[in-house]
Length: 109
Image 1 (cartoon, one colour):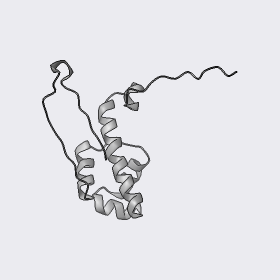
Image 2 (tube, rainbow, N blue to C red):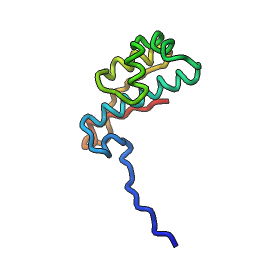
Image 3 (spheres, rainbow, N blue to C red):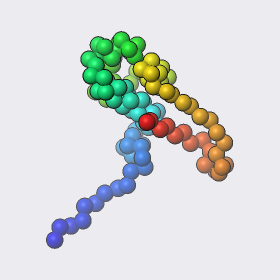
């Protein structure tokens, strides 16, 4: 018989699970970059064509697509997604449980 595989359940944010500073921001950026990558794949675009459409210089875009997220703001990535025709919606609402307030959730379709 095999010994059971040990595992730890994820919090849903791999960056937080790894103990990285700014984990929430990294998760938002990763989601937005993922949306940009899906657009590139969906339309079969080169990085140069994608860079032109997003307004992000090609060398910078290349770094983003390889997971190097430093030096770009979430706002710039949101604007890039919007330039690709993606609908970006930010909703601020009261939370029913006051103790749980302050949580930020991003969903990428």
